Length: 102
Image (cartoon, rainbow, N blue to C red; front, side, top):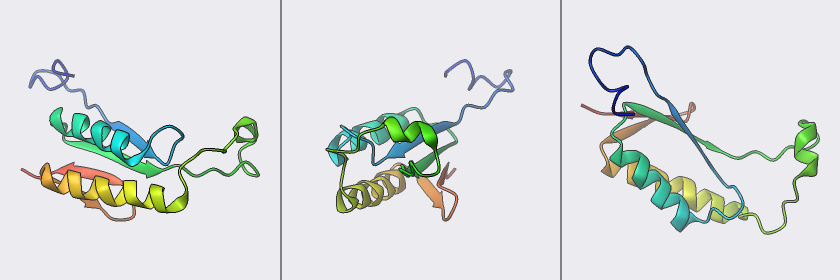
């Protein structure tokens, strides 16, 4: 990632994060967001996992038992907004894109 940040390199790295996945509780997700903030990228994207097996056939093989329930998923989303704002980022509402303010 450091090489991509070199002024002589015209490469941009986008990081997509998904919350609401199994085994990713709000505390673990907060650690992930903090690690991304430390990288000081210009932007990253954040999405809530949408489990729609009736629409996406591969998702039919996924067993959702033990996944975060809606309040836990909502808490993770709220928590990421607080962490990113504290890290100097702002959310573009409706797109899930987080931009670093300069």
